[in-house]
Amino acid sequence: MNIALWLQRTAQQYPDRPAIALGREVLWNYRGFAESAARFATWMRAQGLAPGDRVALFMYNTPDYLPLMWGAWWAGVAVVPINAKLHAKEAAFICSHSGSKIVFCGAEARDELEAVLRDGGNAVPVLSSFAFLRDASIAPSAIEPRGDTDPVWLFYTSGTTGRPKGVNLSLRQLRWTCMGYLSSVQALAPGDVALHPAPMSHGGGLFHLPYVMQAGINVVPESGGFDAQECFDLAAHWTEASFFAAPTMVRRLIDVVKKTGQRPTGLATICYGGGPMYLADLEEALELIGPHFAQIYGQGECPMMITVMPRALINDPTQPRYRERLASVGFAQSMVEVAVVDAQGKDVPTGETGEIRVRGEAVMNGYWDNPEATAASIVDGWLYTGDVGRLDEDGFLTLLDRSKDLIISGGSNIYPREVEEALLTHESVAEVAVIGRPDPEWGEVVIAFVVTRQPMTAAELDAHCLTEIARFKRPKHYRFVDELPKNNYGKVLKTALREMDAKS
Image (cartoon, rainbow, N blue to C red):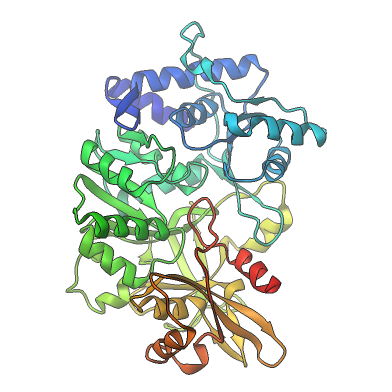
């Protein structure tokens, strides 16, 4: 079936319910949303696009993002979402590699992207005006029949280990992602609100799917991105509002509450993921913001669908080993299997570390036009995540680090997250990121990049570390910085930190 049937059915059942809003203003109800998508599908067919073709979206969050996406699906066309903060050359590579026939682009990036594509011999049209979405003279078209495994969403990875790879997701993966969310994270009702402060070009772009299925309201902040106070203001206005937040975003939410002294209202669920949530931050968030947090752990290759820590458990301090569980990423979601294995792919004993792998219907079809990378990542149906973790006897998974971030110093394994957790317990430390630096004697030594709330010394941090972790794990060097480099999703870029360290 075509995923656009979800929108069509919701429009039939709830035509007058608000569907898309900008800030506090409703722009489309579900009837108008579906009609815009259907007109866009007609427009695309007139441009010569056929089922199975691809179109790219290279733009910041905007209400138009959703009808563009659903209109492409209506026509049987796959969407290629591109991080709006990428350089035009990086975006051009994704456009070319995916074979996108049209690029829908923010006006601020259009000229540069057109020039780069033209210089590379790619004449694909780049459009930044979307009047066809509101052109009532265009006749809406019927939904194009599609199969369960036809591409729907080609998400390109960050490319930290080379050229980015296109994760090929079909209706099958998106359907199970929605089912997993509704069964494991939170149930939804018509009129529930999804705020979209996180980039729609990432996992946050899939967060809206269950809301369309359930006739929810998708609200794009007027800022087009994440502003903590704006999120609180919109939640108070709309009520029953939920949104996805990376851990760094949660930290900024905490800081706003501390600054204003006002406990937010109107919140349903803040679903965090996309990076490590430190225990100290989560405990402070629960105290200051309230019992609104749920956690998901996933990857582009298995979006939002590896493990879950639901609100009920996060808000139940009576459960066994409560703080230990808070520091975990929860347990396997109902639609998948999760295992921790050694280098030979064999399960490790409970409590021991290894690579996390996942199997289930939500795992990607493979990487677009890259069979070698697919074969390396999916073995016997299992997706090897590249993440290191351990499972306890109750099935709770503690995520340690990416396997490539593991530091081996003097023959001992050191997981950066353990060191980061220890440093963050110091009241003067605002943010921290730990990497390994090549060393001729030790193999690697631990380097900590630290953002502080007030001036402090390396000696103070070293003394604090000795009260929290083993001596061999403490950083060899501390680098005090004003801020940590982050991607569009708020995730710390350790590749950039390694480059900074190598140049120092």
